[in-house]
Image 1: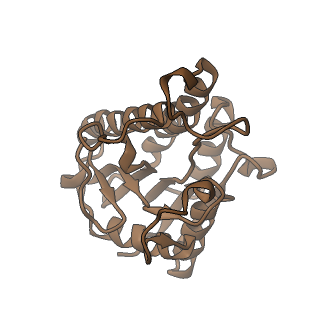
Image 2 (image 1 turned 90 degrees about the horizontal axis):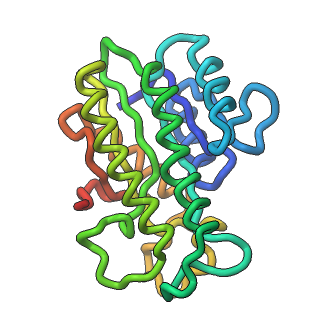
Image 3 (image 1 turned 30 degrees about the vertical axis):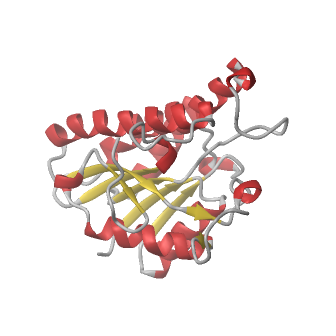
Length: 231
């Protein structure tokens, strides 16, 4: 499935850049946004005004067929994800929610109205399997798990309204697997052979999943292999 116009938020990161490159390689016009970009392509998930400005830029050349939020935050420089409840801090909870849940929700607020109304279109945000409440048997990673669970709920809630306003569009979460990026680098040691993906490979899988989705799949979360992740 080819897309005419797409916006990629987080296009300076490993997965975001790979997604943008892969889309352009298929002939899609891609508008790239990121926190480190200068000028009109700057978008900071913690600054709603920058999100609104980015949406105005993206709207300039017509409707979008695809919006991808390829951003994420796991932990700060002081330490890894919490392994014990004594490590929970308000600052880390707030930062995880700001980047992993609030930011994508604000992107949806400003970018969902830009989706095409007369054809299939999609909005997708990078989620994570650890955001599944029913799948959580290991514990730990309090802030990251909670923020991704919140993102999954936001996706579900957005999909209900989207179905009324743009019946042919879908809104989903995507789990890319473990990708060889700076975010996952400290946690790659236990990854099974063949399951540590390069960004390009992850982008290939994710775009393959998106190519098969329709409005009937809206509100759900899918892994890189196309299998649904339960809430």
